[in-house]
Image (cartoon, rainbow, N blue to C red; front, side):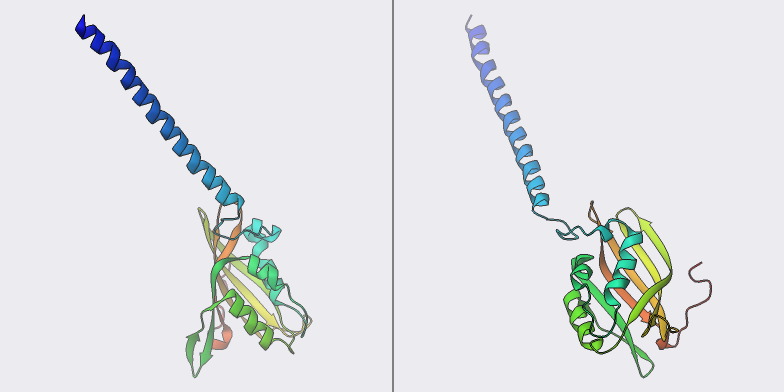
Length: 196
């Protein structure tokens, strides 16, 4: 009789303990899920809060980048879109050639914009893609883009080269995390068939 009474008093205590733990786990998981949704609602995306239509596909983001840097001298360029197409911490690395040696200048998107505003303030500049190769795996992509540079849209290019874009997809859009380029001014012409 005593044994039965002890069993009956302990069992509800154990059940109460299990129920409490289950409820706490459920509340904890719900809290984490809610926090995650709130964070995304507040724009906590790797590519940033903006969602320009040009960023929804790889095929549209690259032509948009070329359009933002092209235009007549003194024209107002869409620098806002250029920033939106890059991740907040993207780096831009042009290669320059001095005395036969390459030098690189790593810059942020803001620094790149500032430099372009100075260089092309009184100069026409048009750049467009001629051909490209796209490599995609999962949420990342590398694009080799053969470009031509002109000072007038109706004249022959004065230079050409290759942009190397690295892109990531944060689950809703693509953005550029880095871009590096080199031109034929470095003494290395683009090989025929490179982009076939």
